[in-house]
Image: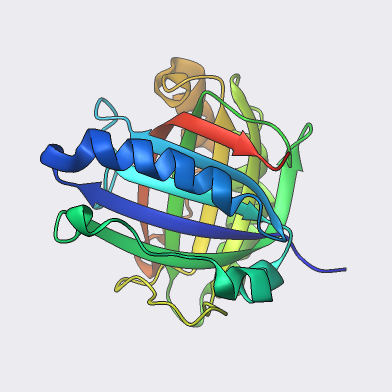
Length: 223
């Protein structure tokens, strides 16, 4: 059985074209959803009130794909990926492709939270198994008990089958937590749970992370 996949686009948009680009992009995503293997498209904006960790562009676009073949179909190859010339030089973006390795929570594949906790991780070579034992075995199950956390989907970054440019900083692991709202992780119960399932001291220096809260403002599914 093929594994679900995710196409992620992070972007930063100059203010003078922001409104026009958003109108164009929302229409463009609906066209993308007609392509074989595309299931859902969401656009999100980073929550400026959440301190986060590491650098992140303000806009995030997520395409849920049936599998990686969605990016290599004949229809995808023929699809016009270009944008209006007026936007050139006013937009910076990074592209990454992931395959799903875990999907946990009630109706996790379908749930759409009012906010997402977006976590990208790079683990030092030789510490992957130890990290996975802690993160998958202890941390993720604990976070899923947090009131307001609905689900988590975990991914590993893969080479882009379409041959498009990958982001300059490679974070090989991605976790996306669906939440009831952007304040879930700031509440006392969430902080207590996170501290109880925190990283073991001997593992702390062997991985790096960037995490931010995003809120969706556009969502569409294949009709």
